[in-house]
Length: 447
Image (cartoon, rainbow, N blue to C red):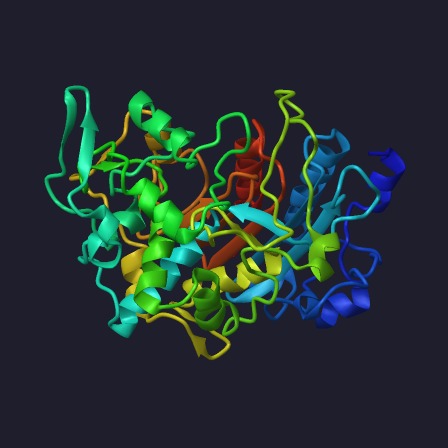
């Protein structure tokens, strides 16, 4: 990465004249145009407004820009795309740094990112669409749709015991099904079983089981004991992947096809999918070869061909603009630009606390994914129970989720705020950068 190239690629947004009509102004001075390869997704994802019209300070948003310029200059991240909406209007959008640190291609507003676990909220919405259709119920046993999960066993220190009740669709949505991630669980027997089944690939690539067909995934996972009694413990898991298989069984369609029909197309999310066609590959963001802090190799999923299964837990790709539209739909109570995806009541259900005092957080890395934040969990999102306690700015009722490669989004209904941060940085600094983005967004709110 050459400093002169970095200097020229700090802010890849449209020229000021176009910004007035299409994107919200970010910083003074003309900026390079969007990529010639850009599709219709290069249009503003939402109607734009000056920051002050949305109750935010342009000068204070400049702190956000400057902070990430510095992170890029110090080679902490290759580049990033950031978008903020307030009161339903796009008030800040910026693309900084390089799309691929091994070349000179600048980051663009239409750059495509591997969003990993930010696929989970979208798969959760897909399931709730089927609930609203009357095709699925939250109380349905998973085995109703996937018979391989009937009569499950639970792994304990004293051996395997029968599950006290069946895992349900609600359990999948809130990660209380007793399922594990091989990368996170501390149950040695289950971890080994997952590795033997190809559901966990230690030393190869994390969070990637897309080489299996959906049927193979279900058949293999159904033979592995659970790590908790269903409904008793929150532990981050393969639940969203399995939820995708339930969506397929209930809809009769491949997950990506169902989501395209009922979510992506109505919301005009033209670059969101489970893989990237050849015509768009040149727009995919790439990480550093090694984590700049830990020095370990960074290995991200290959997205240039259709996978064996559409991973509802970690397989999605998207742009900042596409994801902003998805998040704004949720902020609006399930509707965007006249296209209703969910009812207001369903969005409220999804973004409510579904753990309460009855469900414990696992005392291990799989539970710490949520526990360290002091957030609770809804149906597909972390949900903030109060203004305080959490070590980041926010409001009671705000909801969010992030991805393994550093991406994050959140919606703050009380502040009428939606924010998306896209980066490819699967390493030790991702938490720091997410928090930095969040605190600099909130400090720019002035009304």
